Image (tube, rainbow over all chains, first blue to last red; front, top):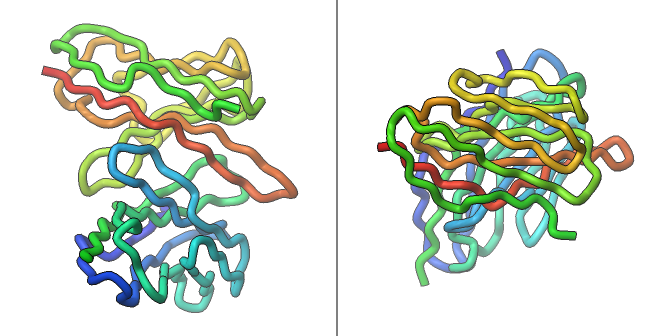
Length: 112
Length: 114
């Protein structure tokens, strides 16, 4: 079945460091891909999305490119801040389905 | 717009008790869903609804019931709580604008079953 695999955390970085969180997917068709962020004590918020191959989603300095050839959607940010500390979830949904399939989440801790 | 609201924020139950987790949205979304979040497992779909009067099972439906009598409300019922249902529960609603879907999540209900 369809699935999402994320790198395990926690990922600990110093402020202003470069961030990459890996995400790969398995799907029988052409999914839409998402990154959600969960700040401590809060629900999930949509960070960015991409709906077709080679699309780049971006928001708040974060970027991710839909790579069909490598079935990947890695999240990147050039310079992280302490306020970026959160859990990041990669997810997919198929056009024919209403369901979101999530990865297990990656916790990011940014130290001053 | 209040978005997606959930009550209560936190609940402690004893094994065998029943309760209802409330979820409401004011965005007139047809699709709503319930997820549970467990450590190291991401979010898993419990039940979903594509409109008033229509519900279906997700990945982990056992021990839970849902109903959808209005577009706004989508309560989740635990019939007889078990320790395995200790989790954080999230309700979500979905919009599709210009063919692009976006799901909006509530703040969550943290449930502890003793």
